[in-house]
Image (cartoon, rainbow, N blue to C red; front, side, top):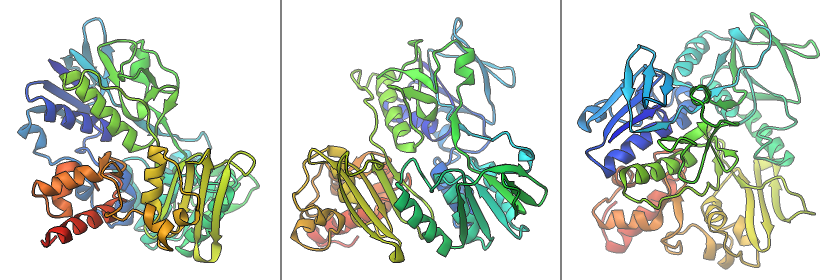
Length: 468
């Protein structure tokens, strides 16, 4: 079978490795518009901050393709799909036939149509990181436009390099899709203490040579301007090929398009009316498609993902999941706020089950709450222990303690790794976090589960009296 994958980002690269793990004989060709080896886009803020190098965020070793019999066309974009001939046409004029085609073209940065926008740099790729770092070396000030996840991570990264940063956001509070107004305010104050000046409810009217101009005429000094105004699915290739496209490329539970020989996964795919902008759903989708195209599991289906958003900015701990915007008249709300400490915790409960949560500041409860959110199980009557798992018996009974965590509990959200899988891996000889990561991929996504994995491995070693 000839498998062609268009897109070598986090979803496309994961699909290639999943297929090869299941079947050694499939002929695989992958096209990547970027010349880079596939890398972890989640960790790009670390590259901007200078705490990670491009090599440290790489997903695959450069020799992996040759070692696994995969043809990788890096830096070669696909410009057309000839569905009649089942062939893709590359920018260099070559044509590659396929039996199965998977589109994993991801998303592209939204560039707002404002005067002078060509003076700004989008924050989306490793090449963008290179440009931002180069400009930051001589910039006396920087402005980041956009207060979502990417904007906050970019601003924190620049502040970490010692560049004075102003973060501008159109909405009334930061991360308005994931946070309520109070959490947004506390996050703003936390960032302020870290060197990021935040302005919300403002509109940028133009980008000048050394300034950003706001709609009211105010000028903000900016030797460097970074755009983080959101992303949109890259669907032009699919649309030109006549596939059904709405906001994303429309797929069914098998991730197939309306052409049964073509699948779509990751941020370019629209499943059940939803386009996901996080890595975990793309990796889940890659696993389903790999099962189907290799025949490893012909009944594999994708049923959607329950999202947990984690902010990956140094010294800022934040997790948000589910329906966070509901009020007291729509659900049971349990809330704790301590602005001076930069702490905010909120549970959204309906019919005795957790349907949403925000954890800002110290997030020791995130493992427990994520498990309850994923499983949809009933909550204890005393909600206090959910917010403060170290306070007493109620908290201890549900906390992410390895001794009390069921084997079915999902520890690594990005890679869907359970405690039971980590235990099995340990019993097979993986006695440290690096060995567990190599076997299960736990900790290799956003990295926020590393402490939990270390705790489980340490606990297992203690039970057997061995050194971790």
